[in-house]
Image (cartoon, rainbow, N blue to C red; front, side, top):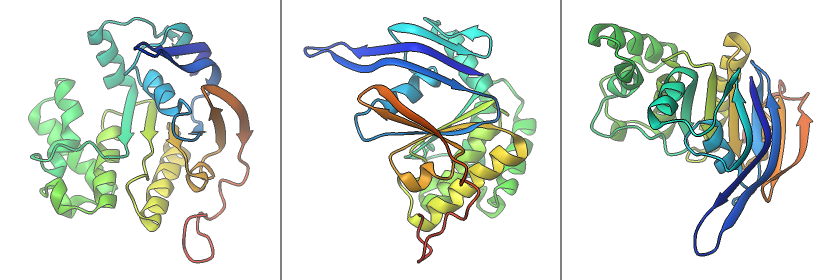
Amino acid sequence: MIHLKDINKTYRGAQPLHVLKGINLDIEEGEFVSIMGASGSGKSTLLNILGILDNYDGGEYFLGDTLIKDLSETRAAEYRNRMIGFIFQSFNLIGFKTAVENVELPLFYQGVGRKKRHQLAMEYLERLGLLPWAEHYPNEMSGGQKQRVAIARALITQPRIILADEPTGALDSKTSVEVMQLLKKLNEEEHKTIVVVTHESGVANETNKIVHITDGLIGKIEENLDHHASPFGINGVMK
């Protein structure tokens, strides 16, 4: 489903920064993958390229059968809106919109009518246990509730891929476990292809494939056969 061949990316500036140095990666439909690396390793740049938020300089990126290269902003937005759901560390909710209005937003950009998008948004909030919070604003919700709103927003267009950038980075350990369990359930029950960028081994260990990236290169890829084990450690803290 995702095929990357020799992807290179350099940020031009007074001091050019070669961030990705020949990335080769295949992600199949229905896989739950983490991209793990330290700060500055290139993992977020890689996620931005996967999400068609950033261009690459050399190589090939195929999403399905489509070569994603030098797309116009209109085409890029079209692919993103149709194929990809995003979850961010900082939630990226709009502060002056309620939970249900935030979840509705991607459908607005798809031209779905007001009544239909409101109905769908309420259904997704209900699925995520957030119906009582539908009319609340982000500043009235906990971090875990905000992240679940963000997940509902990512799911509402029924994307084929969910890209999550440090989705537990702003959450406490208990809420982090809940969010990862939710993503795992989406993968297992709905066969969503999910790619999570993280620097936390506890998060990576919840996925079924771990891609290690160091200094812009993939070091190793490991199949994680233990990802069905409980994420709770001795004191209820994430392993």
